[in-house]
Length: 514
Image 1: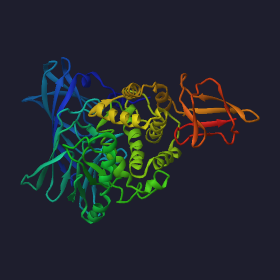
Image 2 (image 1 turned 90 degrees about the vertical axis):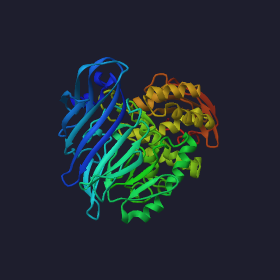
Image 3 (image 1 turned 60 degrees about the horizontal axis):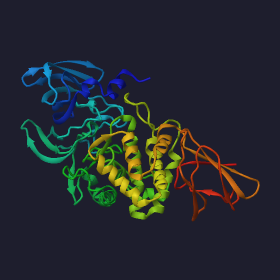
Image 4 (image 1 turned 135 degrees about the horizontal axis):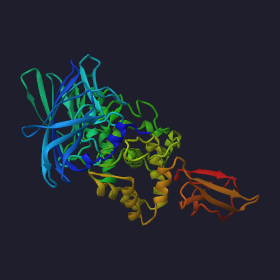
């Protein structure tokens, strides 16, 4: 049963839906000693219908100091994380308005990586960082419209004042720093592209900086030489993903890797990195194959989110597989680009052991429901399966490239993905998407053999009534494509039960031989 907070957070309620977000200027001061944040967010929006109330999100115990509309102080109501702001007159459809939202306080430390964390580096210097996707969200530390459907179409400016001697690294391009002559320096960053609220990032530390043709890098001084070596992988990552999907989508904002003490996060144009300058995931064989140790998982995976999550965004948290399933599949494409298709198949199938198949990948819409971890691994295996169903690699590459380019900078749903695939493959792939995303179990190919070779009966055991996925069977190297449905069919075969194989590296399925 969803909580009231989840209902408010997950719903595109009337006071979110009545306006279109255009621009933010987040101007804050961070005090590491007091562990506080304070400042103002200027929010510009266009009304989509007449109204005199909008919703902005900010979690308590952060205080709303005041909200200004020009010189007028606005009234507001707080309910859970939502701040319902009332205007003294009607705001009219099509007109653009701006408010200044002042706030202050101690951000709550919660969620997987803490949301907003005041820490220390190994030398005792302040190390402050944000990581907001999931339980907490952007509203744990700044007032924003926490609705994935609506990004600021005109981008945003980020100004962060920190104690002298520290550096703030945020999203977008560096726009200069200003000595405030009070012991603080303001670091300014300009984001020229639409950005998810949870992607907005503050990283404050004793950073040193270096760069190459691909991007800019910020690390602790003692890690500089390790970073120079490990971050050379960025070039191979960029080459691979641009090969499949087109130009890096945030070229105008640049690409950064920023060292943090947690594993990492896909903050747009400022990917955070904490993988210990080792290949694999924290030095471990994450994927279950030798290829998992040939590259730095955090560089390859979190940067892949620049295409899926930041470039193309799910419109509801329930469709987050669009972020994680695609990006996990991108890992296998990185492997294919550098080591070939056989390596890619070995890599992606290594994820089968991580799939639980206990809950549907897509949970309930509109209530802030989070998908199970199967969204990563099962999502990637589903895409590998679809490639085999399409059975035409050039068409497959065209569809993937076209999907990204068509929906770039947009927020979309599963139905948008399915419709695009159906239109551009000329196939009805809806039952396959439904089976893998909306039901816990993967399809099982039932095979029934006689006492002697000559014939085998086959059908799909699936939740979707019209499930009819083609599959390759027979002998490796001499596969035969059959078209099972949920009704029994039969075929002639000279193979015995033991000799008869199914291409389970190409399709993520169960096989039941009887």
